[in-house]
Image 1 (tube, rainbow, N blue to C red):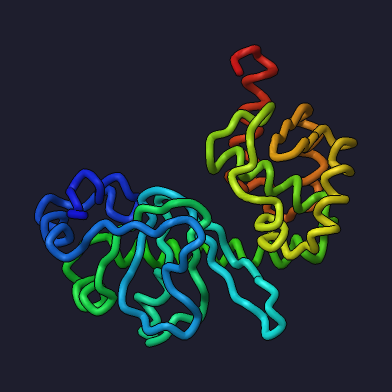
Image 2 (image 1 turned 180 degrees about the horizontal axis):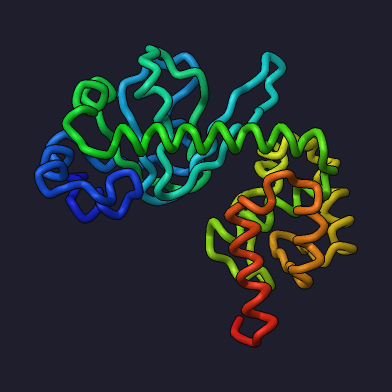
Length: 251
């Protein structure tokens, strides 16, 4: 499928490109699809393209020798999939990418992307910011694994989903399977199931795939009290704004 300038500008990485930059990208990219459950690439495959998600969600993971999947990220529309591979100049993928749902992706030749980064004013800078943000997220997750209980990590993730997808915290459907969320949080499936029951005491109920954060302030206090970066956290800030609006009767 042919790329358009509007499609490019709808993606955060290319939101402020000029028309000339956009025309250059349009000529050297395409929109492709990846059906749910299909691999976009596998660990050890040759790196041939750079990808940005236009629609859908993609699981980025490794598989242990014993066959266990370790999910590094679940990426959604607007996210770059392999920005690090543009910068690192490695030849082979060191992760797997599999579609969580039907995906539409912007595809650009990796060799072309590497050769032409200098032709764009802000793309290289945005890629580096993206990588820095992900590194910080990894560091925060490492802290959470040490300082938080499984229940706190799950509650934190559910709140993050509300912000990522603009869900109403008082009632929404999980966008991913529980088993996928468990692998993302490094929690055993059995532990994850037991944890969901414990969340009732913190103002969160999960029935099947339906989640309801009935007491947002209680849930927020339960999670953020153990996090060293709560005051800088975008999720924490957005949910506090919603709590304040609700207190004023505007939410």
